[in-house]
Structures are given as structure tokens and as C-alpha cells.
Image (cartoon, rainbow, N blue to C red; front, side):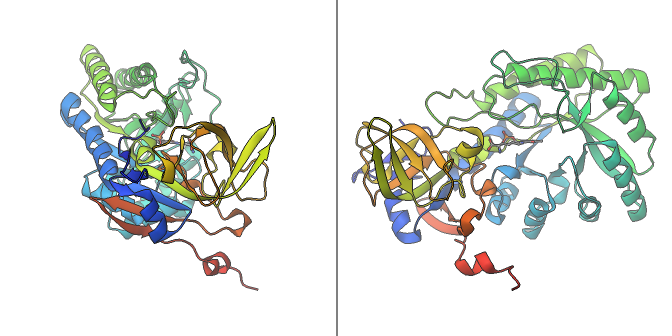
Length: 433
Ligand code: LLP
């Protein structure tokens, strides 16, 4: 009935999250409020991990893409589940390091890492630095030389697959700011350079074909392109690339229109392709890494808001204003992303109304959604926006100097704050005069 399986309705007609009454949560912690279900996060981690065990003999590592939702509690959960981390900035790396995250399980991404970031990655002995371009390679080689070590790197490759069209495009996508192109020979030249450098150890190749993908074929095709490239490197350069990182991008259910595949199926098909190609081309099976972000965090999250003014513009639309908006969830403003909305205190009633949910920012485009089916709604009600666990808190801002909401984690029938609500003092904390 709901897009995420941890949601239900209790005897009071209230929406429950991980078994906890959402209205009680708003009474205890206020709104707007991000709520994350720890049990569901852990379940997602386990299912990705088990799929590698089942179909690929455990020869792989799931690295949670922390850009989806990064905080100390989340890093601790990943650590506890034996999951690695994809970080993309010094800030995400710092968060991971602050909880003692094992650095050998960290992949450091980014198309424009600074010298400072590369130095910290070397200093902290990050397991794999995903090198995006030659400018980065050369600087990293120097930094590693100074430190007297060989840096373990993977190359970010553009496999030439656009998974975002209905019938996914197998070539093109050369126009991306990320990585080295295959079809121009750029990637092959880069491999030759890396192999020749004294302080670089090219352990693997990486690709990421997009996000919120529902089709398995583009992933299988990407794996095929990458294994073929590994084979070319071996036959022409005599160098065996040991690891293959296939990125993230697994789609989730935001509304009933979304039809995600089970994560298991992905690993089943991709493993079969990798194994078949490796035996055909006489290659050792590479160690596989995957980087799910949204699929681990998004379904586990709900945002709770209090309804303020309601404006009915006859024959046009009804605006329902909430006490948050694009400052805590900019995804509709940015991508026209669709969400499911529920009046959390009337969750058992039918969705007979259609409304536009508007935020409180001084910006016409500050909407959470348009044409959203919802229960009858009045001022003072609580609206829940579902599946907001990824790319909401992590993409939030202080636009209009609005403090960021708290993040509450629910687990086993109890709740705790894992990120404090910002205060007005936080808002002016860096102002000097
Ligand atoms: N690995 C790499 C190298 C990536 O660039 C990304 C996402 C991921 C893994 C994780 O992808 P996921 O499993 O979460 O789809 N802000 C956008 C999403 C941007 C994703 C960027 N890269 C949104 O709100 O939809």
C-alpha cells in the first residue's frame, strides 16, 4: 500500500515508520523532521552483500555512496554491516574518519579533487582513489612519491552507455565531465601512463552509468564493455587489472509508477556476464565493487512537515504550504522528481484530493510536488513525504537562513536524534560582523 515496506497505519489512523507513530515523533522532535529507519537501512545493506555472496562467491565489496545521506550515525551503521564507503569530498571523508571508519574500504571519487584532498587521502591510506583525469594522476603521483608510497587507484571510465533513455543508448555519452572516454582511445592512453608511473598502482577500473535505473540490461552491458577493456589491456599491455567497480544507480520506488528490480537480479545477471566473458577471454575473475546510494537510504526515509496555510485558487489549483520546502528537499525544484505524500494523521482515509505542496521559501519554484493525490488536509495536519532518505538531507541548504531539520533514527520501536536540528545561533555562527 505504501512505496516503502516499513510504513503502515496504526489503530489511530496514523502513519507509522518502522512501527513508530509518526505523529508521536513530531510531538517529541518537532517539524520539519527527517526520519530514517535503521532496520531497513541495514536490511538493504545485507541484501546487496548477500547478492555478491550468492552469485559471485563473495569476491566483492558493497560501498555505500555516502553522497545519498552522510552523517556519523550512517557511517557507523555501514561500518557495523561490513560495508565500504564511496566518498566524494574531504567533508564526507572527514565524517567517515571521525567514527574510525576502516579507510581500506573507502573509495575516494570526484572529478576535481584538490591537492589537499589527495594529500589527505594518501595520509589516511584510503583504499582506492578513483582517478578522473591525467591532471589528477600526475599530482597524485607526486604526492604519493613525497609520502614514499604507491597509491592504489582505479580509473573512472566512460563506458559509453546512457541508461536514462527507455531503450538505453549504447554509444555516445562522451559528453560527460566524469572520467576517461573509451571510444577515443583516451582511456587506453591513460592506462599506459598509469602503469609507467612509479608511485601509482592501477588496481582497477570504475564506471557509473547513472542513477534511478530500472533496467538491468544497461548494467550488464556496462560490465561487458569494461571486461572487454580489461581484456584489451591484458593482451596489448600484458597488464592484468584486478578490480572492477560498477558504480551504483539502482532505481527505487518513489511512486507507484516506479518498478524497481530486486537487487538480487542485478547481481545474478551481471555476475553471469562477467564470469562468462572472463572465461572466454582467459582473465582472472576481477574483485567486484558496487556503490548503491539511493537504494540503501531513500526507502528508509520519510520527511514530516506541519501544514500551514492552504490556498485554493478556483479552477487552477490548491496550494498546501508546509514548514519546510526546497531548503530540505530541493529535488522537485531541481529535477521535477515525483514523491508520494500522505496526511500522516489521516493515513487511513482515501486520497480524494489533489494538491500542490509548496514550501516556505521565497521562491515560486519552491514546491515538493504538483498534482499530488492526498487525503483531505487542513492547517495543523502533518504531511509525510515518503522515500526521502537519499539526496534530501545531503542536498539541503540554509536558503532564506532556514535552519536544517533534525534527523531522527528509528530502530526496534525506539527513536533517537542522530543529527541535531540547527538553531538560529548555528545560522549566524560564521558571521564575523
Ligand atoms: N557511484 C558514483 C560514482 C556516483 O556518481 C553515484 C551517484 C553513485 C555511486 C550512487 O548512485 P545511486 O545508487 O545513489 O543512484 N542528486 C541526484 C543523484 C545524483 C547521483 C550522483 N552520483 C538525485 O537527487 O537524484
